[in-house]
Length: 354
Image 1 (cartoon, rainbow, N blue to C red):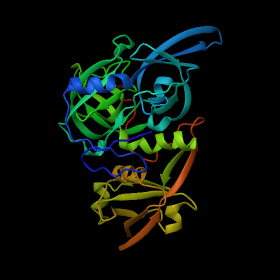
Image 2: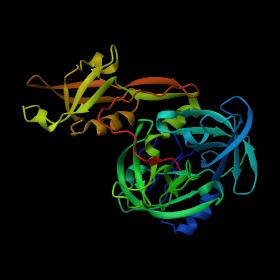
Image 3: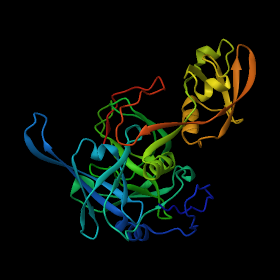
Image 4: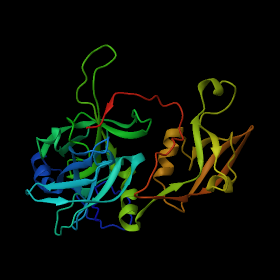
């Protein structure tokens, strides 16, 4: 793996840093990255009733190392027994599953190849609404290695899928269609800042058609998981062991401050050991006010062992509690749907998987 930094000065881990400070045209971004883009074809050998059958579904992915590691969406390869990766050069490879994280909809594949051209990973936190972005993928599974262009329409858009999984995504008006899933979303420095994974399909409540509402997983939110799958063979996630819910306006009317109310505390978890209790209201994290969603995202992006200072309201008193972020380990190949710790997210939205 190698990661090159954008000119925003994003703090990196142990990976290589190569500064980039030149904006590119869309044509230059495409030329530099089309050989890093792959098409993914998946198939099964038995159907629901156990009879021999072959069906195929197409998606996209991109190369993240010169020795054959590939990142895509989990829903592109979920449940399939054979995975074939096609390069822009026309070469085809059988791919093996290295690991996946179902709740973040990512999967890492491996092909036996050398001297491949990996993408450059950028800083999704540096993207602003209105910034230009480009997607390269395989819409419809037939229009292979297509480029679409657009802008960032929104950041941190909460999207709840029909499976009740909630994700905070980048929203874009790049055309994202069936077959684009797992492809890269680029900034104009030619860096990957997202993984395209969803679109809004159907029509609005008024019956008006809906166009150009697509979504991508921010690369910053998943890169540590990807590295853990490749380097450790398991998924290492930071955790403190609480579930939280925003303090409602009605509750605030009774004098409770705004913040993230602690709904449960995992026994013997980092938060419990530090003294956090059910019913506490976290009003700030490291001095910054946060909603419950922002708090969950903050912890998810923290490092194991990092100390976080919580400002806590408890029965009329204000406390400062320091929590050491712990490590939660899960298998990279055998997972079950994790229960969401957030409440209040409506399900059954018409979010499509492209």
